[in-house]
Amino acid sequence: MTIQAIFRLWDLMDYQDCWVLYRCLVDRLFHLWHLQQNDEFEEFEKWSFLEQVNAINRVRSDPEFSGALNNKNFSLTPEQKQRASALAQIPPVWKRPKAEEAAKGLDMGFLYKFGYDFGSTHVHPMANDGHQAFYTITGLKPVPDFPDQISVLSNSLLVATMLVQQGLNSSLLRWHVLVYDFLDNLKCLLDTGAGDYETSLTELSAMVEQGVRLCRPPNDSEDKRVNDQS
Image (tube, rainbow, N blue to C red; front, side):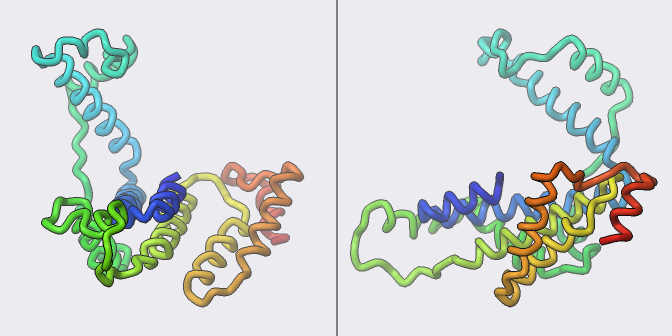
């Protein structure tokens, strides 16, 4: 969905927000790697739940926004209230990973310098925000020689494939090898322009149409046979 949004924004010539979403992708990749390395998925889920509940309660308890008490966007179910109360007794101890450290852990320091850090220059306000968008909206001439920003598309696709692969690696399910082939072929497309991804994507589509499962539970004997044949 994020990739679709980036390409849609590109069509609208909203390049700055393309970079904002790209930076979000990099941040998610760092988080996912950190969670996998430290096996903190459950702790992260508890921490996230409590943080979100606390944010809702801060709005509900603010007398300036009393209308929030009856607003369904700020309501909690009895089950959510009960769980939040239990978690508050012993709050989950979890801290967000530092982006630079995560990049080093991935042995991809460039993802911090040219991904997260560069993308942050678009996330946080800068004096020249909207400069290129101004000429796009107004149509004034002459237009300064802005960079084409095409790299945000290829960079976003690259990070998205890494994010999906990290997710597959973190899963307990055993994924069909063709899924990984497609991701590798997509990376080759970005690197050399090779079109092998079309073949693997066609094969994956055929498997889905035929009802072939792309993943199986661990230690599944049928899964081992399928992967051995692959």
